[in-house]
Length: 183
Image (cartoon, rainbow, N blue to C red; front, top):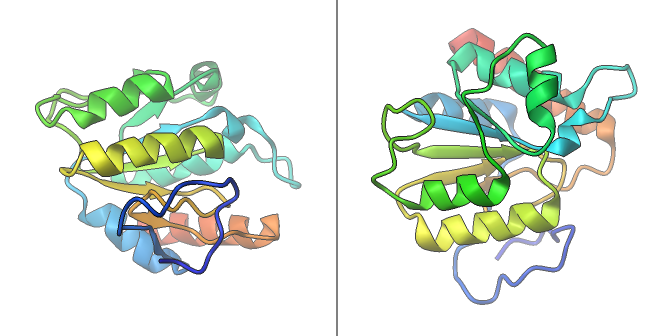
């Protein structure tokens, strides 16, 4: 069991698996690069701006670009992704994409086969935890990862709870740089 406390109370006692806590952006980028068919699921929390005025969604797009990761836009993110000059590969709500990912025979958002790594970014933590719990128990064919600033125990790989946004944004910038170098 991890010593990191999740933002919302979640049931982590019914299983023996909890997220591997990763604090090194290089390790995160290596995991993303190793995936054959990753998927980035972007949520409405990415529509918020950072203190310097950059949208969190721009970080997500910068993460997807070097590795050509397909993007699944949820909620109202589709319009903003388009405004930023990127066409999402799919538009689903979080529950729909979670249900599709459970099916090992699903062809994925680009019709190239199901995904082997799903990265959630900007999804409300209560909804994200439920989706990750579903995937943990019903989609053993894929790994899950989060890029949010809170710990998600039901993911395979999660970041710690960042108390300061500046540290989290520093992590994301370093992750982007690592992906550009090796992508």
